Amino acid sequence: MHKSITAIAAAMALGLAATAQADQSVNVISWSGYFSPQIIEKFEKQTGIKVSVDSYDSNETLLAKLKQGGSGYDVAIPSHQFVPILVHENLLERFDPAKQPYYANLSDNLKKPSWDPEGGYSVPFIWGTTSVVLDTAKYNGPMDSYSVLFEPPKELQGKINMLDSVSDVMDTASLYLGIPLCSEDPKQVQQILNLLKAQKPFVKTYSSKAGSIRENLAAGETSMSLFWGGSSLRARELKPSLKYLYPKEGVMAWVDNMVIPKGANNPEAARAFIAFMSQPENSAMTQNFLKHQSPVKGTEAFLDADLKTAPELQIPEGTKVVFSQTCGKDAIRLADRLWTNLMR
Image (cartoon, rainbow, N blue to C red; front, side, top):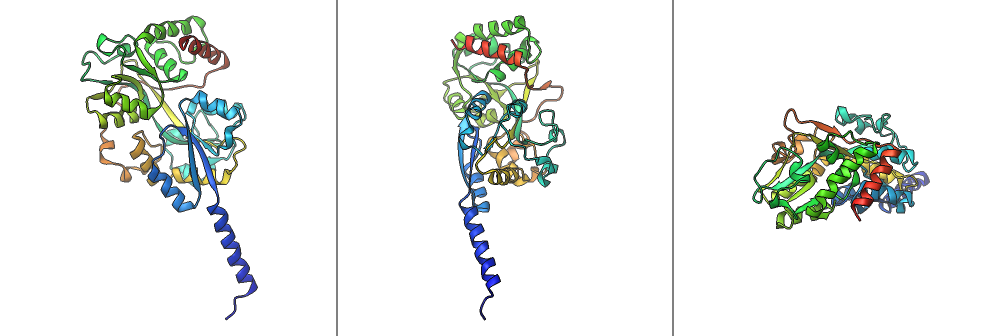
């Protein structure tokens, strides 16, 4: 029996649609080492959309890249305090993820959060804390304060890595000194600069490249670093003597979010990528790889057993947890001056 012209046309349309999807791509820019080959392969296999990934090592670098035109990125992953900045600078597409089915599966405290109160621009990808990791084989003295980082004992001097991010460094220094985050008081910022300048002779590297930090800690090139909880867990897997600290001053918390840069070449592919990464099984794959905390409900059944008891992810009861903030223009100006002065 001959196919009708309508049936042939429908078949041709389906074939063309499949070809179009197969030709799609999504260009992602993220923190270094954020995607395992397995999760990318799974997405490409399920959707036919090819993925390319570029990386950056600070929110400030991402902001600069997007201000310069974005270089064709379809998805970016800024930290939460930078989302309002990117929105204000008109660098993000509004795609209203809060209206999508997957959004309902996010942890309740991360739905329509303060940095995106309408759920219009961002979806949490991964979250965690920032503190100190150190090698207890090199130092086993007091570890209950950030004094070990900012006023390091002799055993750790010259073996320190600090994150190459003014916001991460200043927030932690502010916690230690009891100074409000995003201070606009020049005298308070000068206190932070004095602390960081006094520490600088003991700092070997300023880097936010997670892979390099882990490798240097494992090899003994460095013995202490300001670092993220999940990344510290991955480092401990390489060197069991590493310990993640919960200082009495508290720890900073962060959420990295998936967003779509303004003028994205493939916004539909970007939406598909974000929806895929927000499914419980796929979010668990990300958590198993990165070792940070997932923002998605229902991941427990898919998690590696060791993550359920890892001290880097189990915040002790009573620990002060402080989410970093979006700073005002005066605070940003002072922070930029501080960083320029420190890096001379």
